[in-house]
Image (tube, rainbow, N blue to C red):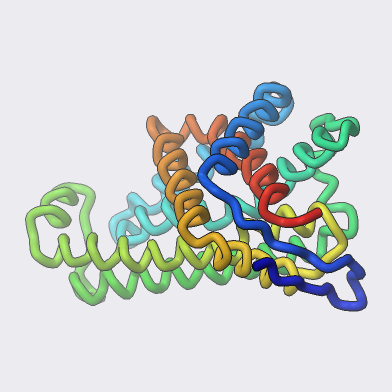
Length: 263
């Protein structure tokens, strides 16, 4: 049964209702997102290329031996910032759905209008999650290899895959990462498109997002798995595929939001 949420007086909005959705809705959202990407692929491909560049910079920086333990957590954790970066894609999808002009310069509209402060607060929240993930990942590394034991590029595979400490770090690290991924999904999958779409504050958006996942746990976890798979595919080779994957998933998330939240 749907549960209503009301916004604060500063951000008046009608009561919100959460729908129950199924796997067909996920397929529909991805198909609609692909249509949006095909319509706008030439305008904003450069935005999608920013992520590969950031990933490559992270690799270059962390290949320095003292920072090597941060290589995987940093690259993997960059996906936490995805919902914030995708705010522009939500706006383009919203405008295209409404039959409005959706030129590339509208990508920045959420940062200039009423959405900018809620987006800023939500982005800070994701930033804190990202920092928490890096701290947790390093704690897992230190618990298995010791604070003063550096990983080295030479023999890295051997250190990870041929030692008990390496396997413990891989298993525990991935479980911790899964926890952060689920937390990110719960607080952001609906909240960012919602503040782009309507005048709500960040608190209302986050509560609605959490409730949307709580109401549709299996389906939304399935969505998270699909996102993770496509992000991994986009990272191969050299993260160039993210130039396509990120805009597509951004548009698709907008359409998923329209299916799960009454408008």
